[in-house]
Length: 396
Image 1 (tube, rainbow, N blue to C red):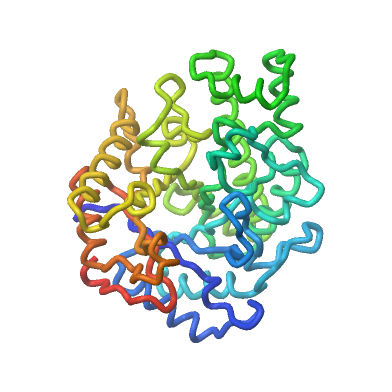
Image 2: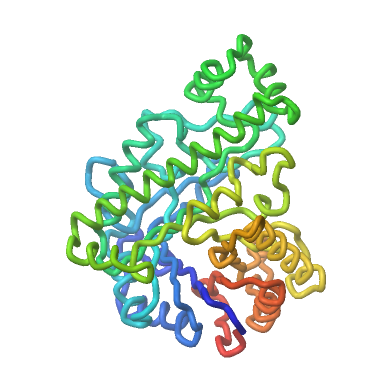
């Protein structure tokens, strides 16, 4: 099976106990070993945050409540466990010495961004119809940029073993966002809007044929792309400050330089705007020029529903991969090697019902094969959560 990039994504917060401040190093090592040994992984995305699902009333309340390392007092972040992230990175490096380890991190839905800051706002109609999700700090706020620069510089200094950043899927703006004060200021400045009532804004943002609205969608995509570039540059600065000799060595080769990756929704592949190519301020075409890895969340059960072992699931995955690869390699551009199709090994929709929610390794293997048959060169998945059935890695 010709898969050049084999990715595993590792949760760490499930290994914290008590109030989250404790963990057992040996238990953590056993937990990580069970997920990596025999996987063939050459890239690992490792978690540096945690969400408090007990306090989530709906998806609009979701944000990254806690960090798993201490970025310093200036951000006022809630640190759940100051040591487990560094310990996890150390263990992964010992188990897979030749792998690339990327910190898996949110950006604009980090809780430490919200205080005294502008929060992303959608039109009232979009809010009422649940067209948007995640609580996020506005990317049009200077304070958002300043705080994120501080955070990512600190993150770059966390461990010499880190090989880069993989941004979580919160970097998005729906068609009905951002109508916060900062967003409306931009809309008025760019397009001369005179009526900024909610109804007028909703009409403007709903008009797919309006060239100004099309331009606004492109602008939002560019703004998020630029913000991600700023965050990665801050990570690089922090790494260079903390590990100058290693940074200089890394810069000499593509095989060792720090990597820049980002999660993209499958909808950014399957439901792109016919005119702009955008979906919720994500554009796969521009992403493939910007990032080293574009991680397409290939979650059939979450996105389409139904049996993950069904013919429909395999067909959906093949279509997703073929569509993304066609975009990547269009006009003679060979960029499909940057694509990573990340599978879900847990059916989250079953979790709350008490049903068995772990997708068996044999089914995941079929899904991997479907992606590879469609031409995928990069495949990854979430290993089983702590307490759920272990995978038979040999099947994968």
